[in-house]
Image 1 (cartoon, rainbow, N blue to C red):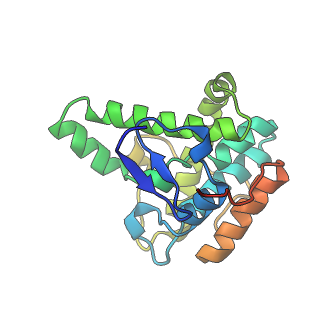
Image 2: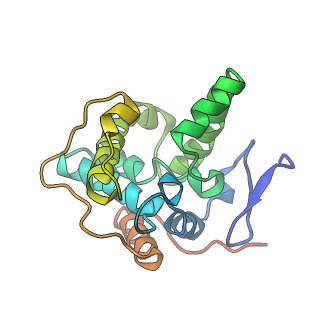
Length: 202
């Protein structure tokens, strides 16, 4: 274990450089993501990372993707429970100042995410196969969020360099409070028989 870690709600010291599956506590993930906001809080209400992940999961369900893809959609930002939501402009700025730094950070984040996904029964091969579809759903969720809950009119296509795609019948009708978001997030994990009981912390 390295000496660079994040202490989670349950007291686990989550190693950011060398994470292991025994460091993963589902209640930590649900709680941290439910109490952390998207877009640096730049929305009328605190819209959580947990609700965003559930939106991606919902899009994948609507499109009929298989179970492992849907689980990955739910967990696609799970590393942010120990990393935080580093907005894209910050990542770009860091890469501008220190070329190559963004690639290193993305590798670290991917390593954390894969560790979490293995705990959910997703192999690295399944992860690699499903990630392009999850990324597409993630971008759709971004455009939906910018359309439905931004305080000002935002050109989400210009922000991302992509053409906005809005899956039929998918919208953000309300912003969940953190307790509701955490409960629903854990509920989705339980639907896939992922053990959401608190780990015993030594």
